[in-house]
Amino acid sequence: MPKVTRPEQVRQVVDVMPAGACVLPLIEMASGVIDAPAICGVAGVTRRCSATPTSAGSSE
Image (cartoon, rainbow, N blue to C red; front, side):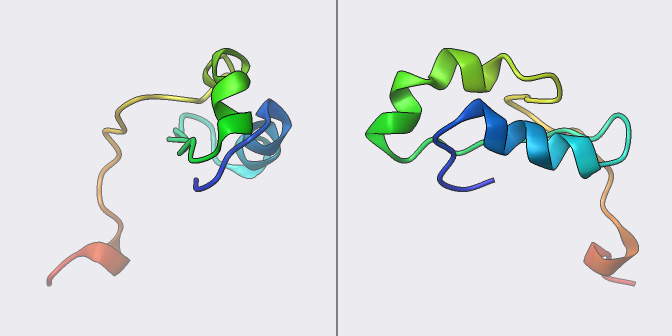
């Protein structure tokens, strides 16, 4: 999730994702750095996703 600056942005995405999905927010701006603790504290935020690839990403 690019250019995250506020926790609300992450919550909006998490709210529409399937249960158990993870979000990896990319903090690219100074305003995001300031709010990094709150951004990282949103449920569903992770530093590493272990999701399995979908059929769209398979090479079959």
